[in-house]
Amino acid sequence: MAEEKYREFLSEKCPNIWKMFNNEAKRRIPKGFIEFLSGQFAENGKNHLLNAEEIIQSLFSTIGEKEVTNEYRGDLSGVYTESQLSELLCEVKVAESLSKISSKKPELRPKNKDNKKCDIKITIDNCDLYAEVKRYEDNWPNSNSHKRSLAKSINGQVPNDSARPRSMDIYKKLSQVHEQFPNGTLNILFIFHRSFGSSKTYIEQALFGDRSYSQNDIQNDGLFAIQELGNVSAVSYVNVQTNGQLNVREIWKNPNALKPLNDMIMNKIRNLS
Image (cartoon, rainbow, N blue to C red; front, side):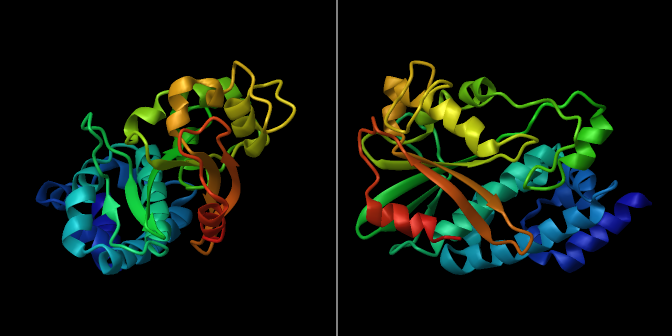
């Protein structure tokens, strides 16, 4: 039975992930994991999960096995697509990286007053910092099987014939992200997005506007022009290298931030790489 080889790999090579599965997931491997471990990029998927295994072990050490399991068990056990699994692994990686620079025990998925959650809260030099992770995936026009094989990489490997991503798509996805953060705090958004074109350019256009000529020039079609987005102190474009290391590619401060990100904290985040 094909599912048995996935069960064997997860239970033997990824014991931390395996023990976070609920009983149903152990009986029937979640579809997202099967897609992640099958097809043309199966070895790539295995390597990502082996890296995730080490990341989760690190989170156990800094936050606690019980807390980590309580937050991620439901998602890991019910992940339906490999795209969902990729986004979850991105969240876990950022949480692990940030936890290493926190002066206090980090808190996973803290709630705000509206009972919504961001991904992690850490403390740097007595300042609480809240972080949210989003993974943007290009919409290419080919078959679902082609999409599934290409979605295996957390970095978002894309084919040469993929549809050109547009800054307006990123804008639409992120226009409500401020609702996940508490008000009046330092809040940072991490974006994973690799495309056929220039990811950095697309994100920058979404933040400042298509015709912006500098990071101090915010056009009306930029996310930073939205009053409510003043709750987001900064946005960082990141990816994961082949060795599993988080790579901070760029950080943009929000010129209209209600609580600006200072240079000391920005440099600590930049040095996560």
